[in-house]
Image (cartoon, rainbow, N blue to C red):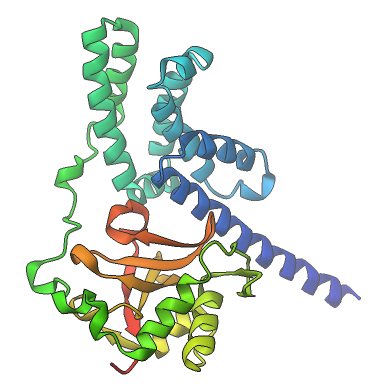
Length: 303
């Protein structure tokens, strides 16, 4: 009986860990999409749940969104201490090893925020709002002084030698299998996200790719994203075609997979199972969340 109870506890712990990752991923994606009020509310709810005490991430996103939302006069009037509270949170994060690691891993977000605050600072000066000006100026000088500017971060654009070959975006040269994969995937737009889902009632990321490949071209592929990455034929960025797979990492492990939907304008649009909006299409290089996490590309198609 004790063994059974122990196994149940282990299962619940593992299941909880999965939920935590999904919850945190949703915060990051929602923030990247500019849904600051939504992120603020969700992060506050996570902060009230003991199972999330292992991470500073909810506190980080509360502070981040406070500084974004405070740029609205109406919101700031209702939350008059938001700027001071956000500054205190960032200083606390900088004082711990775990907090510094978190800030380093979100350097692009913070750098973008720093740029927003500089623009806001100029507006406050023109408007003669001295008190707010001093608060924002103190954050820039005391908290974000060492944060690199957005333009000084490692270049996100692809080296010219790695640009996608122009002809790959031309649908007229797609093989029948590629067309089938893309058409089958597109028909599933709007299907909700579901943990461990692998049918049209709901998909997770690898459940979606498995379903599309098996039902559209009769090809069974590995169920897990990490295993799909291992078993697929690796390809370089410049050789990517619609119908190939794009993989993402969280730390050192593969955490997400999507299907390359288009390579127009030398960018990459993928269709995937998003934890926040379900099956949807996103431009990788228009998203700070995705473009920083690309692990590589693979294919199960021969042409």
